[in-house]
Image (cartoon, rainbow, N blue to C red; front, side, top):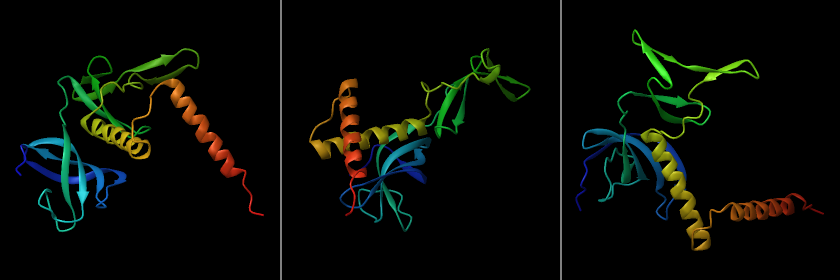
Length: 180
């Protein structure tokens, strides 16, 4: 079976911890597809199987999806250390460039007399790496629900509240047990 895209994989950048029946792990890797830089959701396989690519003597990869890593014109990529995610910032809205140096705009909080960066809530424009990681997390959660319950659970506020309450009760039962 030939693949429509030509993949090369450089390194694993994030591990989900999810393993399939063959003990392959679902990961996000940095690489290229058709000579364009991208992040790839792939199964990391500890064998050289015919459906995998990029065998290096230890592991090979079975790619599932990819996200092209492009920075839109008039944007820069920033890394949010608190969330450990990357985002794109728009020029003139969040930063300016003078003499080749990037200057970030700060907003003043009048109540506390504090300054904070203008991009603290920029979660609507994630980079390719962040999109790949978020998709794998979403995929894992949905697969966990399908394996456990045989269907996807409701995402309504009431259903989430019920599940949280049930989980808290179970934890309280476990904590209140004593070994006599």
